[in-house]
Length: 129
Image 1 (cartoon, rainbow, N blue to C red):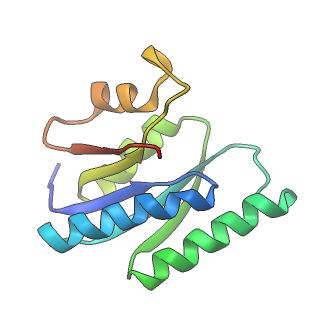
Image 2 (cartoon, rainbow, N blue to C red; image 1 turned 30 degrees about the horizontal axis):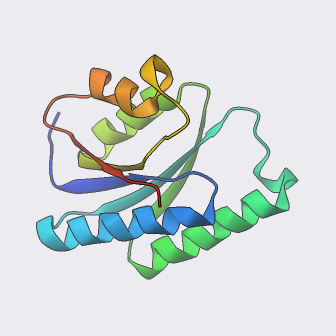
Image 3 (cartoon, rainbow, N blue to C red; image 1 turned 90 degrees about the vertical axis):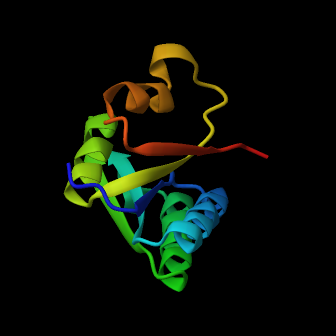
């Protein structure tokens, strides 16, 4: 994998993910590279069917645009594989994720990513408030 200092910020459908985007911006200011904001929506999830979720994604899109980041919404039933594929396709070297306080062990997406990503890809976990 050809790795550059491209940064991927993984967001959920919550407005609080603005903090993750700002963390990605700080890393970009220090290391350079392109900033990508990514939300992986489960297959079958209806973005337009829930106005608060759609509103949150619109808000995150505007934040992404204001900092010069590309925002992508992907559909997949395999979230970890989709993130790994995005890393490969976009030469990602740094991933920014929010803490998953309620999920532990093998169900934790951070643990799953660390097991499957190439070692040169750095994972930055932003603690919850």
